[in-house]
Image (cartoon, rainbow, N blue to C red; front, side, top):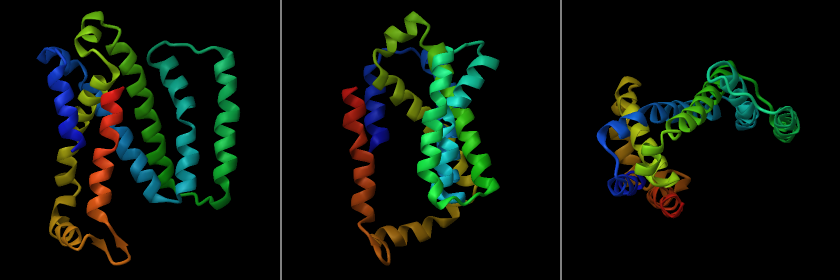
Length: 199
C-alpha cells in the first residue's frame, strides 16, 4: 500500500526519465541501509544493534570527509560523543556481541552516510529540485528505487521458496501466540503514507 501511494506521488512530480534515473543511487543506498539494519537487529541482541546504529552520525562525518570532501565543525563532531555515548549506555544492559550484527550494522551506517551525501549532491541540481517539488517526492522515488533493487534479493536469498509457508501464516492471521498479522501488516503500510504525503 505504501508503495502504491508513493507511486501516486511520483506521478504528480514533473520529472523526466533522466531525472528519475539520477535518484537511483539514493534507492540503492536506502535499500542497502535497510537490509543492513534489519539483519543487524536479527543477528544479535537488539540492544547491540542499536549501539552500532548509534554510530551512524560518526560514519556520516567520515564518509563525507573522505569521499565527498565535506568538513563538519568541531562543535558538531564533539556533540557526537554524548549522543553516541548516551545511546551506548542506555543500550548496554543486555549487550550480546556478534560479528554478524557488527558487520551488518556498520554496512547500514556506511550506506546511510552515502545516502545522505548523495541526497545533498543530487538535490544541488536546481532543475531536478524544482521538478521533484518536495521531500515527500524524493522519499517516494527513493522508496520505489529501493524496492526495485530489493526485489531480486527475494529470489537470490531463497526467501521466495518460503512463500507457501507465508501464505499459511497469512491465512491463519499469524503464528500461534502472535495474531493480527493482517491488521499489523496493513497498518505498517498505511500509517506512514499520510505522514510522507503531508511532508
